[in-house]
Structure formats: C-alpha cells, structure tokens
Length: 357
Length: 266
Image 1 (tube, chains in turn purple, orange):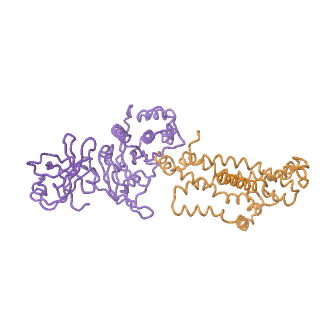
Image 2: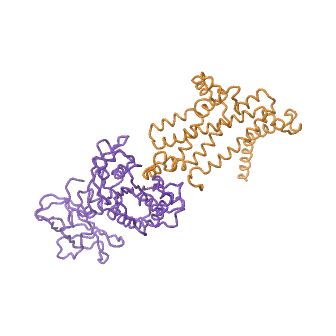
Image 3: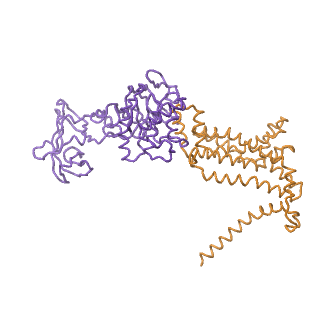
C-alpha cells in the first residue's frame, strides 16, 4: 500500500457508555460496557468467539441498538439514535460485503456517489485510493475476478473513501490464508498509522491485536476483561483469562514466603520481597532462561522438546508444581531427560488475582 | 448381455412414457390444422381454423396478455420489496407471513374465486372489468415471485451487502435500488417468467371471475371446446402453445443462471 498518504481529519473520539445488548431471543450478548477511544487511536477488541466484540463493534457502527440506558457518543454528540447511514462510519466486513453488481471502481466510489460528490472529484478520489491500497489496474474488474487479498484492499479503500469519522474493521483478515494475513497486517498497520484515523478493529487473533492496537480491549462473556497497551496486556495481564488468552502463559498456584516461591525444584524470588501467602504466578515461556543445572536455584528435567522454527519449546517438569513451558533458543541443545537449571528475572513474574479465572 | 437387455427395456419404457405424454399434444395440434378431423389427416391440412380462432378469440388473447403483464407489474411492485423485507427481518413473524402469502397455492382456485366474489362482487363496475381477474391472478402468483426472489437473496448474503451499503451512507431506498434489486435479478427474472406463464394459463380462478366480456385465453379455450367444432378448439390449443412455449424455454434458460448473481455482464 504505497502512494501519497492524505492527511484529512483524523476522525472523532468515540465514547461507549453503559452499552448492553440483549437480543430479541433473550441472549445477552453484551453486559453494560463503558469504553473511551481517543481521536486517532487504533483500538483492538480481542476475545474468543461469542465474547461480544462484534456486537460492540456493530453497536458503535449503528447496526445494533444498545439496550435502553446505553449511549454512543462521537466527539460529545450522542449518536445512539442515529442510523448507520447517517453516522459516517467506514466499515470493513469479514466477508467484505463488496457489491457483485459493480466493478472495483464503482464499489470504491459508491459512498461518494451517495454523497453526491461530483464525477471529476470522485474519479480523482478513486484513483488516489487505488494507488494507496495498491490495486492499480484492477479498477474495472468485477468482484468475482479478484483474489481474497485484492477484495480485502477494495473493501478497505471503499470504507476510507468516505473520510469516515471512525473506521470499523470486523475481522478483516480472518478470511485470508496465513502468509497473506501476515503481509496485509503489516500493510494495514502502516496505513492506519499514516491515516491517523480513529479505528476500531475486531479480531480473535492475539498476534493481530498486538501488532495493530494502540490499545487492546480484551473481552470475555460480553464484558471487558482488561484494557491496556499490547505490552500491558501481555506482561501485566489483569487476570488469568487475559494471561491465557494472550500468548502462552505458565500459571502456577504457589505459596510465597518472604517474597520467595518455594518449589519442588528450588526457589524463585519475586520482585517484592514482602509478599506472603498463596499467590497465582504467571511467567511467559520466553522469560525463563536455561542455565547450567549445577548451582542453579531452580532445576528440573526436560520432559519434551519441540522445534517450532525460530526457537524450541521445551516442557520442564520437576521444577514447579506443574510442568513449565520454556522457550529455548536454537543455539542451546536440549534433549528429553536432560537436567537443566532455570533462571527467571524477578520482574518477569506477574502475580494474578487469585480467583479471576 | 444382461446389461444390454436392461438398457433396451429401460429405453422402451422411457419412450413409451414420453409418447404417452407427447402424442396427445401432437394430435391436438395436428387436429387444429386438419381440414376435417373425423376424416383424418387425409382430408388435407389447412390454416382455416387458426384464422377462425384468431377472428373469434383474438380479443381474449390480448386480454390474457394484458392481465399477465398487469399481474407481473403487481407482483413485482409488491413481491420484490416483500421478499427483501422478509429476508432482512427473518425470524418467526417473517416465516408466518411467508406461509400466509403461500396459502393461496394450497386452497382450490374455485374457493379463492368464491371468496373474492363474495367480498368484492357487489361493486358492479369492478366486477365487470378485467381488473377483477387481475386481483385473483395477483393473489395466486405472488408467492412464486416472493419465493423466487427470497431464494436468490438467501443464496447471496444480501443482508451483509445491505449493511455495507448502509455504512456508506445509502438510505433504505438507495440500498434497495443499487444493491438489492441488481443482486436479486436472477430471482426476479425467474419469478417474472413464472408469474407471466401461470397467469396466461390460469383457468380455475378465472372461470369464476370472468364475465362474458372479460374472457381470458384458457377460458376462451373451454368455451370453444364446449361450443365450437373440435378443429377450432384444437387450433386454439395450437395458438396457446405458440404463445406459452417460448416463455417456458426462456424460463429454463434463466433458471440455469440462478444462484449466480452478477455473473452476467452489465
């Protein structure tokens, strides 16, 4: 996605106030949710299917009406009762929703046509967006002649053509294969930064959320489990659900005495030496280093090793009360049965609230 | 050897069944151009009867075409938006409405006609005009239009297309015009041909609803069987075939394109 990037207005700030959604059949899709999104910010709604992330997005879009009491505000204007066609939102659907009866250029220009933008200006704008999204030469193709990646770009171009107040993306990369998804994720990231527009992005893929979001909203069972930057979400998860949903986590119930975890294979020090009592400790696999078994404070035995390309993932037992997943660089040779020492930086051990799971 | 015997037996059976169905049609059409049916084809072939039918009944033919096109207009005007609304809304109520619309198919045409007569027969001007027949035909053919359009809408995720157009600022009417109708076109075409064909051939309802001055083609056919020479009635059948067969063929052609909206080039 190259070409000149236009810097128009950067959209609006979006506020969601106590928005709940109960469907006609009684299903509670959304508990009362409150969320503030700054102008120009990219926020990712992340969660497993059925967590309410798409319902929240559709409520912001105006495709669903929140239960009474909920409000949606675009820059301080209450838009709760405004239908989607007057909210000026750009929306990219998972299935793209491109019009099969129109060619690529007509799809991109449809919103402009509805806004009665003149022919000349419309053509210029379409050309600009075609260049921006890298789909030059496809302007007069029919939609069924495009590949998945090309469709995704057309859908994006069509959504930003109208200079939306907020760009809403509902799992826009899910329908693509892995390699293409990776590449388009990068392009999308650059484009969102360049446009600087307020964007809300729904996905169930945590790596997408990490890569794209200024902030990530992790959702679970219709409620927000945590809001934070990708780093906060990853390194300081608010509870067990977030820790397990985002990346791989070793979560161990342990007893702490004087800031030290006493385990079968040795001991681990916490950053806070005054911690006492039962704790729920979370350690990421890449935070655990393999060291020589002799003289190590914590040691265990290699239970299994699998090669995952850029590194190895080992499972170590005998160290903690249960097996630990550990990332091992390819430069260190480990094999099943080896006795290894483990070292963990005290700041990499995160204590989770006990009962949040 | 056994395989071959089975094949021959199957072929013979198929041909017999086909002949059983086709021969009467051919005989009927042949009778329409035979000088004297009772003397057989030896009496010579003639277009005399066809001409006679045209002179006696051309008016009913034009009226039938008028009724069919008017029925088409009504079903397009009511049926396509109805299909769109029912598809978007979904749920139990939509299914109920769909069933109600389909009900006239299950009720004997005579009963429907009787109901229409009981309710509206008192308005003499209405009763005497061809519009009275139009009402019956519209009720009878509407489900075919609605179902045909709904089938195409269901096949092509029109709901998301509608939401996409809405997000771009299109009003419900603009969405209907720019997105729904073009993408439902195969269903609309198939439904239209079905409606026209059914209306042209409709007899049950029309027999009850017509007046001597508002006969349609099939009613005229019954009339000619009852009161004319057999050759005239047969010639009438011939005329009917000539009108209806091209419609049936185009219906098949369009049915072949069904489920592939947007395939045809603009």
